[in-house]
Image (cartoon, rainbow, N blue to C red; front, side):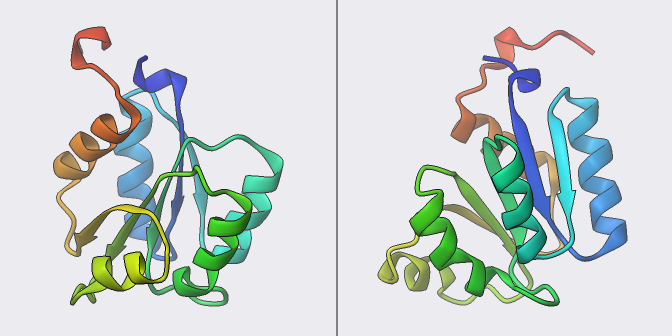
Length: 132
């Protein structure tokens, strides 16, 4: 499998972060879907196949904590990565609630680390990727 085989949704309300995600991941060949809050993420998930969701924890409207029970019920196999400025014991909290979070990243985010984690989750082998 290669990057171009996958669609990643980024739920992020900050326009600058949206641009960073879009540039970095489109450049690698991923199909990218950008949404600004949880309600929009749900609408897009109903419309198209998404292979992985990267979401900010705090967003206006429906935030990630409100989104997770719906994801757990309607999209239980969708891998999710949370990006937040409020880390604490979030992984343990999510697991206690039965939410299968693949990773949590603190802001400011190191995009190269996120890329590596996504490749691992999606089982993308660098050997399959064309050289840039």
